[in-house]
Length: 374
Image 1 (cartoon, rainbow, N blue to C red):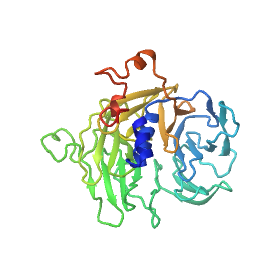
Image 2 (image 1 turned 60 degrees about the horizontal axis):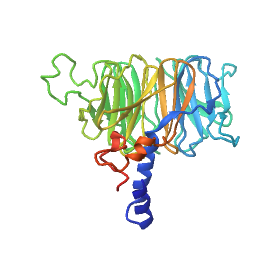
Image 3 (image 1 turned 90 degrees about the horizontal axis):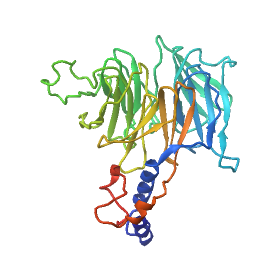
Image 4 (image 1 turned 135 degrees about the vertical axis):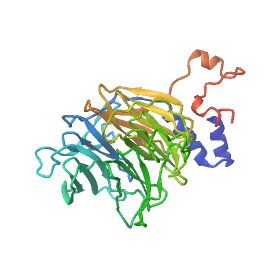
């Protein structure tokens, strides 16, 4: 790390290199923050979280009780121990509250004055943050499992679907007209919303090898329901998760299965599972709800880096905060937990053998990428 500081001071390296190295270091030492609590508002499980990208200050949560909560994540107390307060709540006493489980909440990417929620009450609502009243209500014939607003598009807001339930949809952060959708029919499709003829690609786990697909349906991404979907921050890759207990990483341009082996990733949820990918790190990491914990994987190697344990019941969603390299997770225990970087002090053995040949304290997730000797 000292090498990065010296190179940055001398103008030899792009400052972004140091920033990515520090972001990676912080992600690799995430621990449960015992000093930070969240106001417990939800009576049942928490299905979805979203942090606004403008200030990184406010977070939305949606619960199985139909309640939506807006949290302020900043610490105004000046003390190490504090509670993130619920600024406002759309609770059971509101006549505008969703009647059934809220499956997805999302801030409007360009203005915190608006956010969108979707629910099993077959509605999607566009909310005015100031008044906590819906400015628009869209009604559907079936349950709304998920929705997603493009983080970059300014000219459209369109959704595409499958024959079975669409469990997850995500807009590409690279191209405003590209949409990915995952379904209970085991398929993941990429769409160009400028075309009305159909999907661009249907992802095939076997990369077109029909001999390997003899026992499975043609052009399936998983051998079960696909309920998790997430683009990398640059939009070049797409990560999917299915009830076949597998995750797959795809080239979003070609639709090719990169064949990264993550091993068995427990996934028994019949609804959407909100996984996320780090931003600003090298390499990137995937944060995946896995039973009562959150599994952290090296995205491009499949290595299980660590497991974050703290929940008492199934974890359903996690949200990465790119400003501070923090992670928020929530699930059926109704708790929202904050995981923050806690740098580990080197022990005596590490300090004494720091310069010994053949020894390295660098995490294997990025051991070949850099070291302090750089």
